[in-house]
Length: 250
Ligand code: BJW
Image (cartoon, rainbow, N blue to C red; front, side):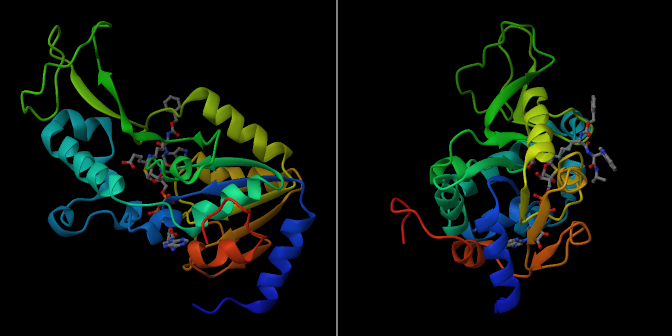
């Protein structure tokens, strides 16, 4: 995809001039790693399900086996994926400037690229917790049940992600809001901007005087908030926006 040269130059200038950058990422940043975006996530066997209907506690209580298997499928897919040049570029940026990295992603690819202190708003695909546990829950030795249950109380294990209608982790949410209020630039990468409260962060940054740049090959709900939209895939675009760091792979 050809990136508009004037937009690219303007983005580079704004990033070079910024001293405190909030980077907000969504599923699109992992697309070039082969991880389907959330709203594209249901291919093949899963094509007949609506992701917004699977990612709820209600859906899990009604069909725990189905929802658990969906997460197992995604865990397998993500475990086989590798961070791409966009993930690595953010590591390079953080070596040069103050960067607060806030992600809606649950795939852990930022951490695997080398980003530290990643603020995960929606949890992590590889963490589990108990649904209505007894407080001393223990999973049965692998008995092939899907999902695992507690040997004491029979509670269901569930993925450690944030489903619709659930509150975000308090500290992560507080830190993300603080970063939005104090940054001088908000770089929004690969999100449809449809899911709140994450989608509200660029607006908060703008209201506090920060510039907003969106990187997305498709129109998003955050384009109207942005000062500049770079219509390009993240893995192609981000490495062109600031110098690489020595440790990042070519
Ligand atoms: C590329 C690319 C490339 C492709 N390069 N880009 C205010 C208004 C309206 C509604 C609400 C509101 N506040 C709250 C709500 C309700 C709800 C909500 O937002 N609903 C909307 C759908 C309307 N929000 C919630 O329920 C949240 N909870 C909450 O607010 O609780 C309040 C509460 C308080 C006190 C007590 C109790 C409750 C929770 C939201 C949790 C979201 N969870 C999910 C699932 C996580 C687990 C899982 O993965 O299964 O998080 S939903 C899903 O959407 C996932 C994502 O993180 C999130 C965002 O999606 P994202 O990342 O933007 O992905 P896509 O697929 O939508 O977009 C990909 C983009 O990439 C596209 O634009 C592509 O073009 C682009 N792209 N290739 C760059 N190469």
